[in-house]
Image (cartoon, rainbow, N blue to C red; front, top):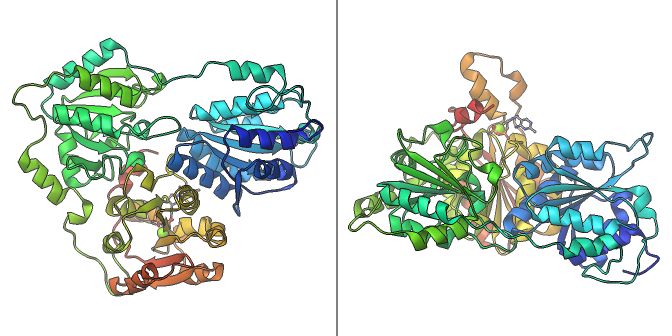
Length: 566
Ligand SMILES: Cc1ncc(C[n+]2csc(CCOP(=O)(O)OP(=O)(O)O)c2C)c(N)n1
Ligand SMILES: [Mg+2]
């Protein structure tokens, strides 16, 4: 950074120095210079076709890497277009920095209340105040994002255009204002260690438990500077004989462990639900035990004890009363409890050789018998999903959109680990799945990205098909196409309500995909999936779009659960 440069340039380069690696965005005049400065500073820029897509891509990238995502948007409509993605990220506590150009002049046609928009979706409003404070402002915003917040940093056009007020360089940003050094001198924060009393209490309750179940959530996943808590949780579970499960956002975390029940909640298989309901102790590890994960409480057996461990005090007991709430980093707490735990001689907890065999045989959804509804014209979504699970390489990232169909890929497609599942569902918006898959694919180019969408969500987010092609991502997009907003059809249909508003004529989504440069295939039978094998065996030069015409006779069993949450 040199004296006399524009603030926009100093901000972009300063952010790149702070660690912004990949920036997603749509460039207009208001974020042109700052984005180019980020690139000049060494960041990679990924152009989305819609700001909603850009925000979701950055969110998914952040979830997959565990590092803060960055989005760059134009003033006014650039930000309003991005709002759904920002709301999803904020609700998910994704570390995300939104660079939002701002026209502060009230009479500007681009004027919106940037801070108000941010606050409205529980993102943190931040601001570039002046040329002198610019780098301190950027640093503060980035630090806040690192603390698992979604931050909207307003970049007023006038401040961006001003000459950066640099003094003698000191500190990592090359910055100069007194604020910069003040901020940089601030102590780093460390995850809270559990209190010794809490560790003793958990160990004592575990010792008295006969059938304990651990449910790991978002807080057990890895993130910047902190590894995933899998090893610590497995060690403790082994010592006390606990079974293992996750919330949906942590799916895959215990993949391969013989005591893994996979996801707890609406997506739980019958055996998983039976075993969780049979627990006399449930410990949520970085998991809020909310209505989704606990099926509105139905997965909690009568008399079961609930413990929640979280590094955020406000999360404890937020969704349901717990007998013991422990403030502490998940891995640290599990390690400390394992060290303190005194095994009960001869007790195996919830684990027995018979149960281990039963889990191996029955816990996966694909091993649960069902009547195949495929009729030659339309394929049963379960049959489709199982066939895809067999066909697609194990090293995959599955991203799922919202809708009636969403359980099929979530339940029938296995993932290699928790980073292999991208579930941007905190806001329950449709239309985010494709952009989620793109962000995750940019984060993990070594894995095959699989975007699982409904026809409604696919057409809502359709513009990003061009992004997939342009970036050369060898993605598989599978559309569970029932020619309807199936969620509404199945929810209201049984009441005899008119359904014309939620049904659509057939759309040739494979042809739409081809128009964007995909290889497009329409699937009506399992045999039609031969093309998928052909694509997988080939050079995968173009991404693949599968328009699967699915049967829609029955609503999904997790859907009613979801509607109960409204
Ligand atoms: C942005 C947004 N608009 C509307 C809704 C309400 N909604 C929930 S599911 C759904 C239907 C989605 O249709 P599709 O993607 O085809 O999936 P399906 O339910 O048919 O499986 C709609 C419209 C929503 N969740 N988000
Ligand atoms: Mg549909």
